[in-house]
Amino acid sequence: MVNDIIVTMNRLGAEQLEATGMTGAEASAEAMRQIGPGVVPVFPITPQTPIIEKFAAFAASGRVKSEMITVESEHSALSAAVGAAAAGSRAMTATSSAGLALMYEILGVVSGMRLPIVMNVVNRALSSPINIHCDHSDTMGVRDCGWIQLYSESAQEAYDHTILAIRLAEQSTVLLPTMVMQDGFITSHLLEKVETLSDEKVQNFVGEYKYPHSFFDQTSKDVLQYSSTFGPLMLPDYFFETKISQYQAMENAREIYKKIASELTKITERDYPEVESFQVDKYTEAVVIVMSSGAGTAKETAKKLNAKGHKVGVIKVSLFRPFPYKELGAVIKDIPNIAVLDRAFSFGSAAPLFTEVSQTVFKLGINDSNLHSYVFGLGGRDLREKDVEQVYADLLSGNSSREVKFLNSNI
Image (tube, rainbow, N blue to C red):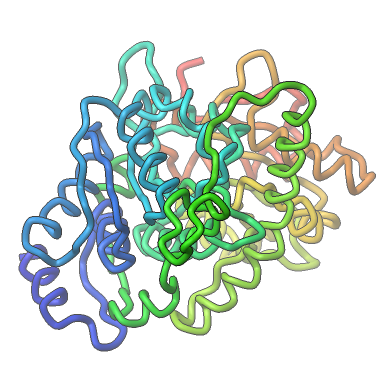
């Protein structure tokens, strides 16, 4: 029944905003179809596989003209995307977990070559032990590889973020690859209502792709004048400067993100803040900071507690790279009690999101004694409302310690 609805919506061409039942994986594939990348190299891995399965069905039926390349590994998938992007084609792909880990060598190649590849990543735990369910250990493990990172709470955000990501990555002062995340099974396989745009609106928004440094510049008669070199050996006399240029590009992405998000909001009437505040005002006594699908559970819990007279809220971080220190700081500067919920460890250090929030607090020059770290949901373990209630209870009672706590664990 759901597939019939989706097919019907697709046949209509979505003349206007259409709402239908989609999983997060289907929503990402639909956004990719509407964008119409030139090349999509693919390799399946649970729980990302439904994205490329759906996109492959679009390609097989002629509903998208992308060149799909089936390869022997995730390493090859991203390598093929590198070749396509460097040749001047808009390239996209998708992966999860060990697949992303296998791509590690190429992640730095993509960002260093300034190729605006967009990759949907369905978050899944890294082995060992083998686990196919959600946590953020895969993408947190590559957070410093020079890719912009967007985390999605819902199927709707996975759809919208994919469209936003293309425009952001391809900006001439950015030209950085972008990952769009959604939680494995929780978002990728959960059926939700998703409002889609018409194909025409998406294509008008993303625009025609023209990579400025393509090694095949077909508009020039002087091939030597417009040819480019990719992936050369670079010794100490220039390497440092290329890394600085990447740093500057990532800094450029901060303000450009705001502009592009604002443009998309005018089309969808949905907002895309780097930092979203839920029931947070000057009277709020405690907040939890979280990313992706965990924000939904936290919001529902806060809503129920506020109905009982408590003053609690939720802050969701969507843009993790570049990290929105200024925007987060503006929200938390007057909050007396803060808990950060991470879905990953950083072994031997503080958890990833907690580390960034701590840096934000440091930049604000405020006392960090009200800042507390919780880790949850590793390997797909549920985040329950009673777990979030306990976090709020800890904060409001003053029982939180400086030690990291584990939610819904046996330890």
